[in-house]
Image 1 (spheres, helix red, strand yellow):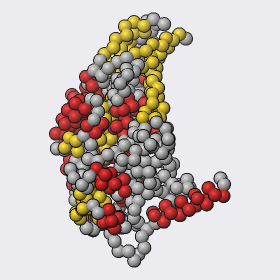
Image 2 (cartoon, rainbow, N blue to C red):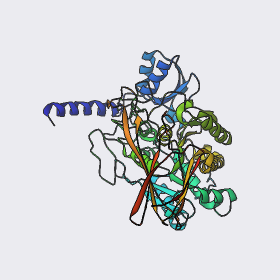
Image 3 (cartoon, rainbow, N blue to C red):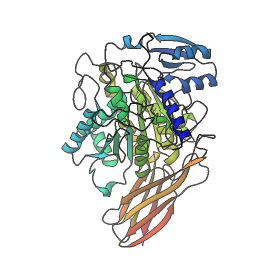
Length: 526
């Protein structure tokens, strides 16, 4: 590093660290909730890129979490607003614990889980149910060195002979402060295990499909939020602090405090749900290029281990439906923001789920977003994608006000989504028989995912690759459920490259399959 670059890096560090530093004791300002009323798309984009939005929006209204110093900036912008909660800390003084223990799938609880609770429960489910539940570790640890765990649930879960079944992928805690977003996937894991063999629908679905659950995508941010000294305490401004931390814990200098503290002292964080590749890097308010902003997208698509982990699952498995969980807007949002080529399907299925939850069925959160989970999954592999914004009372309201009161509706909604993931009308199937007997099948496809024009990398697209493997049955037969070979936004037909290998011989063919189509390749001779 040159002297000039060292001086610049030091200056930048000073600026950002000062921006993150706790406000002086003489400043008595407190965080508050305001509702802004933008009168144009430009004003809405300005608010979304420069303030801490809560997701709880309505037409013509954008709710903001205002940190000390923000109100002056909002006044200077000349955007009309009204104060909804004048003192957020006083409003939250009651804490998050329920008045009584809530009876739930799995352990009964009166407060939100901690990271160690999630990890222990996933490990216990897998150990007690070895034929039904499988624990797995994500390839990449978090920035602060934490292992990211998930579980897979299905009958005969460890058998590679059944890997052709469709997969329902569900995750939580891209955003650290949205604690219910992890509770519901964890409860669903317990629910499926408890209902298997007792509930006809659940049992049938777990024979026909697999469920992959990753309750905590962003463990560093979650721990920072969940373990804050007073849960919702306020120690600073601008970037969000303590219980209201949103992003991951990306460090400015790359220096990480060693275990057991594992807290980056100069974290500014990246928003994982703006770090996926599809249309990454826009300049229209769908994300921010400023590190201390809440929607900071990172330096490049998939720059963060959290999104790399999710990407690796989606591109290596036959995922037919993706749900990512957030708070709080009481909505079911769908990939494409109402502009997807198959919006008729996405809207109709989302509407059924929204009715179960008592939520609104919405095309988008009400403002531009780019680089998000469901938009990327749909654009990259054609997986039906949804974001569920849980509740309307806050990022993590008292446990009984959200999870304890509404968990049953969420289990019904997730079962319906699992049903859709298994329904062949909404994905594709390739089947056949290898004449030589047992064989290994591999599907590959390389493609370019478009980035937003003018994005900071200067690239038009990012190269991605699907690679999935399958072992046939002993007699050589196979049935492979997966998303279509055509990506939905591409106008030209696209094929899968299918390679069949057995006994030292192999054969490669191209396969085209549409949504809702079953392609029978017949008997394949090597």
